[in-house]
Structures are given as structure tokens and as C-alpha cells.
Image (cartoon, rainbow, N blue to C red; front, side, top):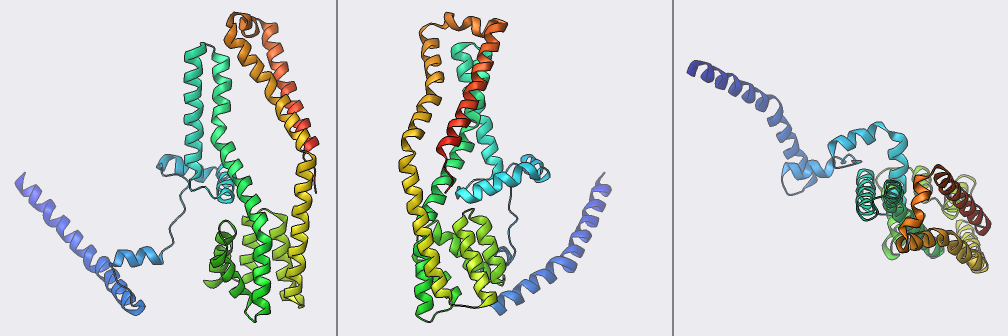
Length: 320
């Protein structure tokens, strides 16, 4: 037994020594040389972290990360939604939050009402809560970007009049304006500054910001670079058009405010009334969940409610 342990230790020592001499030592020497050339301080691990781009993880849970990596049809829309919203979470965390919220709502409702169908419905609604919150944050962020975007274009136009380059104007916007406009222009500026062609950087900018104004901006700049012309005048006209579109948008929201409020009341009234009547007299609602005709009535009411909600949304959302 002692001879076997000693043999194992000697063989393992030889393997580790060979690995250190053949791989670790040359790599450390190369890192040291590179660190001297770059005149940086710190350990070789710090330099390695700065030079190597980290792989974006879909989830901090290894199993969920592998599952999302295989299902691109689910992970890519969630990743795009999170990127556009600016929320610092991963798609895996969003799914886990939805699952936890749905399970918690189901357990609470099932404990209070002892009705399986109501628990399932409440759990499904609660599971969509985190997703709807991220969608709401995305809408608010895009609205704020749309409000500040004309100021960014004006700043770039003033920089061009002062004799600066277009990329310098982008850097000024990134430094002067707050998020989300400053953050998006920072990504645009860094992408071009670190070697990405301006055309690709502008296309990536238009893809990250799903607004028609951002596409107008990228198209105008790329067209001017290919065909020539006065970019300052083009940007001034673009800023004016965006401000006019935003003014029309506000007018449309004011005009449709009554319809939107009426729609929200009509959509929320039936479930609120049903919940109030159920809490006051649960025995009156028992046939709706036990009798086949009652179940058909509830199903038909839910279908009609969804159809009415979609119709009201279509009526009050005016394209401009």
C-alpha cells in the first residue's frame, strides 16, 4: 500500500512538473513581457481579464445557462428585451423570477380559496409580472431616449460647425448627455474607437435602439458619407423632424387619453367585480367552477374579455 501511494505521488509530481515547465511557465513569461510592453501594473491574471472579453452568460445557474444556449428562440428575444430595457439582469434570472412569482401566487391563492382553477389563473398572471415590468421599463427608457435624442443630434451638428469630426461629436454626446442617450452613444463611440467600421457601428446602434428616429439618423449619416453633402444641415433637419413627430405624438396621446382610460376601466371592471362578489359570497360562484355549463360560461367570458381588450387597444393605438 505504501509503495503504491509513493508511486502515485511520484508520477503525479512528474506530470505536474512537466505541465508547469511546458505550459504555465511560458505563458507566465509571455504575460510578463506583454505587461512590460503595455506598462501596466498588477498581476498576470488582471492583465488576462482586461485583454480577454468575457463570455456573456444567459444565467448564473449552469443547467439553465446550457438550456437557454440551446433554445435560441427563447433566449434571443429575452436578451434583446433586457438589452433594450437597460435592466441589469440575465434572461435566466427573468425566467426564474417569473417561475417564483407564479408559484408563490398559486400557493397563496390555493391556500386562501382552495380553488385549483383560480390558483392556476392567478399563478399564470403573476408569472407574467416580471416580464411585463421589464417591458414597461423598456417603454419608459425608449420614451426618454426619444425625448433627448434631438438634443444629441443638435450637439453633434454644433460640433461639426465648430470644425470637429463626426466621431468627436459622438464622443461629446456620450460624455455630456445622461442615460439612456449617453449610454447608447458611448457604445457607438467605443465600438468605432476600438476598430469597428463606422457603418457597422451605426447599424448596431440602430438595432439596439428600436426607434425609427435612430434608423433615420444612421441612414442619414451613412448616405452622407457615401454620396456627400452638408451633414450639419442634414442633422439640423433631422432634429426638427424628430421634434415635430414627438409633438404630434403628444397630441395623439392627449386626444386618445379618454379612450385609453375608458378601455382600462372596461378591461379591469369584470375581474374586479368578480373578485369582490367572490369574496363576499363564495358559495354563489361554486356552480361556475363545478358545473360544466358554468365552466363554459367562464371560458367564454375570458375569451370575450381578451377579444374586447385587443379591440380597444387597436382603436386607441393610432399610428403616426
